Amino acid sequence: MLRILRFLLVGLVLAITGDPALATFHDKHGQCRAGQFKCGNTCCSGGQRCSFDGHCIPLGGTYCGGGRTCGPFERCVAGGTRCAPAGLNKCTSRLDCPGGSFCNGRGECERIAPELDTTPPTTCDDGRTCARGSSCLPGGGCSRPGWFLCEETGSQCRPGFKCSTHQGCVPIKAIDCGYGKWCKPGEQCLPEGGCEKLPEGTEP
Image (tube, rainbow, N blue to C red; front, side, top):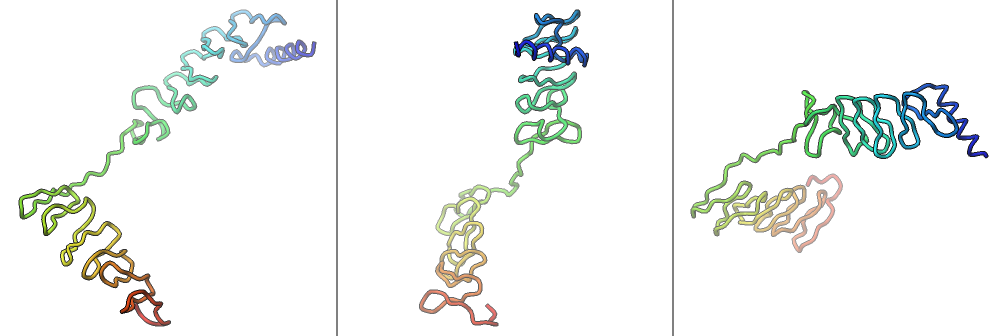
């Protein structure tokens, strides 16, 4: 009995609002008003369509699922959670575009072009060609891409490092002790190895 009363109360409220997009019933038997048709648990007005899961789709609208609808000249994006201008590649913000692209000033999705390395390949004395980002090694061959060669020692250092005296590499901000050994800034290298903190007021 309580369920029937609740049903009639909802029908009365919807009838008062008069919104054709809302569910409106003619009587307790669930009959739709004249000019409407039943769609799931709701009633749709003339000109509307019924979605597969029982939701009214406005005239010219596109159904996105889950009760969400986009208007005319719009399309569903982001899994049906947002609407974007209709048409291939059209957008109003970056969220309307696929990954690796952005919405340009013309309202179109444009792919982000990767930065091209224009450095030409290196040709070595022995005729070998090293790829972009590599350099020729004294004993033949090429350095690793992105690494650089220490001409005085023949060592290869990766980005963020610098050449160490005699051999090897050390972090670019470190104090070089030679042979790839180093101390932190504010320290000094000891002859027997290791590091010690600089005395107060001493310049490194």
